[in-house]
Length: 465
Image (cartoon, rainbow, N blue to C red):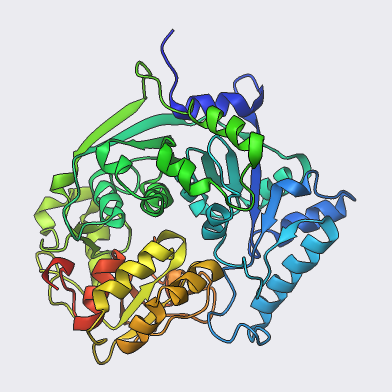
């Protein structure tokens, strides 16, 4: 028999039942909850007169709707306040662990899970949020689910899911200085397009992946769904084990030794066969920037926007429509284009490594006049660490402000919106029309590229700073 992929090993361990010619019933180890996709699910449980089946496996935190300044004050927006209050009430009634607004563990759900040891190798992890794929960086099967599925997991700790196909993406070699995990994954998406991973669960492998920090691996897995994949994962190694060790919800004592022994068995067998496989060279990747209205419309920062004749004829109309929205034209260079806004944060790039990279890049420089910048930590723990390391002081000296944790300007669901027509260099995950606010124009990039743009006021190659 052929060997098994890492994905197949974890899936098989959690498969409760297989329905003939249908989906699998999959046991879920961790269920993460936030305020936006959970109210209807909890209401469904209440209508049926039942409680959360295994509350100890569920962890909640408000993040999408919360403000990133003056969090000690009541939330001004009525709808946002209602959703946050509803989450608090639902967690109290069902004995669910809640890291509420103001709690020292509050933050973006996909930052909070890993930093508290809630996320562990070999687990199945779900959340009513598409970027749950982030947790795959630990060698887990993690994916986003819909509201009806949230109710299913709350009530049974299981979910019905069709088994996806498997894909392997190998990236070998060393990334150049100034090239980050964000650039790596934007490069892959630009090659495979936003539909290239549809129907697949992706394992990222190769020396370039192994050389990434855990924060970098989370960035890669976070963005895996932007190529249409169901999720992404990376085999756990010593870096993974060292990251998890000692965190609050990680196994302790003899349980830790038992867990580590199991985690070391989580790898793809040498003779395992994937449904699809791609190979890329790290040396081919430079700092990336998007120019259009989906994450696949990205190029190396020194390159020009593709000429119309290089685009498939069937896609040319939508291509031109996208460029019209962005105010760009085919063939133009990106370097030197004016920017108005910079956003550093989100579940993609709101970790301490990201804040550290941005702060070190702007140290001794000044924010460009006319640029509005929001530097938003992914959690209170990240915020506290940034202050302890002196990063907040560096940012303030350069004219930046370290805000309070939240999803912030990743999406236009809170007060942090980019005005219509303005150009925003964003370290988040999506650049759809209106994603950061009605009419806002978003350019996805790494924290290093965002820093270069923030101090120059134009699109700038971070390697030139």
